[in-house]
Structure formats: structure tokens, C-alpha cells
Length: 65
Image (cartoon, rainbow, N blue to C red):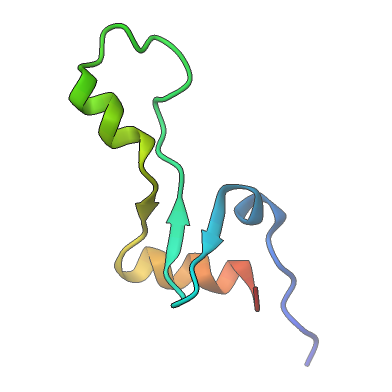
């Protein structure tokens, strides 16, 4: 059976942490930031972690990274 290829679109957007969790960058941070509160922008700056079945499927798409 052939090896599963890594999805390059997922590689560009997500990363695996040392413990195997899937880390991603938040959306809504590129422009029109004047209307967002400082608290909202501060929380969007931090990386997010995928949870549950989404995390499992993204980790599989990332392959053996």
C-alpha cells in the first residue's frame, strides 16, 4: 500500500507541536482592525489549538511531520 501524501495546503496553515497537538493562526487579523476591541485583537494574536476530531483529521493530513 502506498504512503499517504502530505496535504500542502494544511502544511502552510498548521503546525504540529512537540506533543502532537495541531496549532493554527487565527483568522480576521489582516485588515479592518479598527472596529475590533483591543482585547479581541490581543487574543487573536495568540495561536489556536485544534480540538477533537478536527485535530485528528488535520494531524493525519499533516502526515508524519
